[in-house]
Length: 552
Image 1 (cartoon, rainbow, N blue to C red):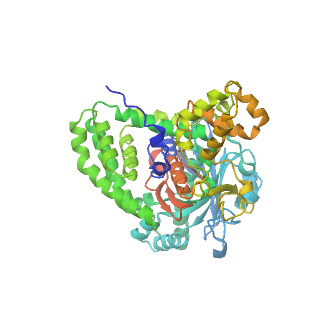
Image 2 (image 1 turned 60 degrees about the vertical axis):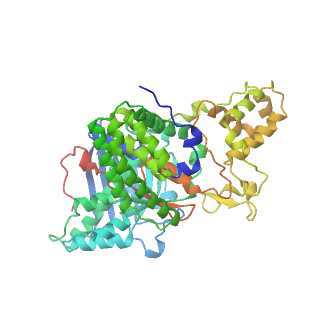
Image 3 (image 1 turned 120 degrees about the horizontal axis):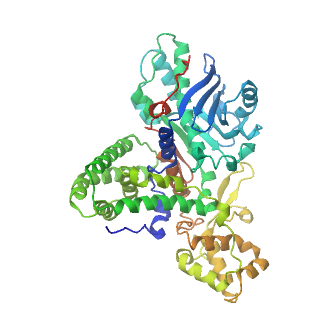
């Protein structure tokens, strides 16, 4: 069997390709749900103290083999004028905490006083994840009204919106005083990236639908309907994501490498297979049909994304017409199918093909989901004994793409990243027309590499890097990146992140696809809306449940 090499970083790490990413079976929410099924997590309501208008609190308990966790949800009145998706909001329809254990009455009282305040609250190490969400007001009201009448909501409205609630933040890792990541990183259930966050959103999805059904029952006792299972499954959790998330992939280069390496390793394994059996072909075709259905449901107001969707639909038609004959008649059929995509499909179609090819090969690739976490501190040490000549050689070998930019041009040096004092969030400024460039964040990797390369030209080749950094410590972060990239090819995004034409949403989509997000809807080049868990099973669909008291 010919082993296929991993796609090189000059292909994989380009911003335009990253901005065409699709979720795969290695995405964090998929890995979390497989773990729930494998370990038979038991999910059931432990408390449901909501009034006729749906205000109050609820606790959803999750029993795992080694520990128990709880989603504690608070639903509170909110004036329409205060409902906003902006991160600087001060009130929300609902707020949540993922709690370590099962809270007693005293803990519920503490949480009730703090969780609805979010950033302004006070938290403990028992509080693992903090989140909040607002209703999609028209759809939520429509669903409650129809169910109270004993009817189902309009399927078109469900499809057009796709969620009853949208989160405005899901915080972890010590934010605002909640538990540090170190507290849970060694627990098997949360060892993978963002597993606790994905569990929180999964449970929020269940809570929001249960909340709508509760309000319908209270409005029309004995007459209200339950939401149809097919309509129910179409509903995910919405999210609006902007520039605050974009710098993450730059600030965590080794973590980015691990994510990319896992996906590319999985793809190479599938491409290297000598044959395609009937089961894998059927699985591929079923995944293709599901993707085509998702494309039909994927709504966007963005002109560029709308055009990309039309191309993707046409790409899927091409795949449908060719896949059967390629997989049945070619040597190394999966490699032949990938080459077909590479030669004939758009970037959206090519990256969709990656997701489709992984889908029927869980036994071959799923274990790679457990390799996507890392200890970043262990690899971020600078080798001060390395010579300046050797460091120059690493730049020439691994950063030719960066050296090709001309940062003397206004277009290449058009923007700067900074943190807004008002919102405490990353923002992107226009260098030549806006103030604040003196507060620039160190995210212009390509420019900094070019500047370090120029500095090294003046250093003796045999001089150790430590001598350079003693006199010029401002280069420490750049030296660290160069040394890290030498053995980790997917650490760097092959693009100029301060270029006038750079689209931040390419960074957002790449990261969100690893989460498992779908139906990307750009609202500008700086923020987009997504859906999480749309079409996915609910906890009760895939795990064994304890007998639970009815929710009334």
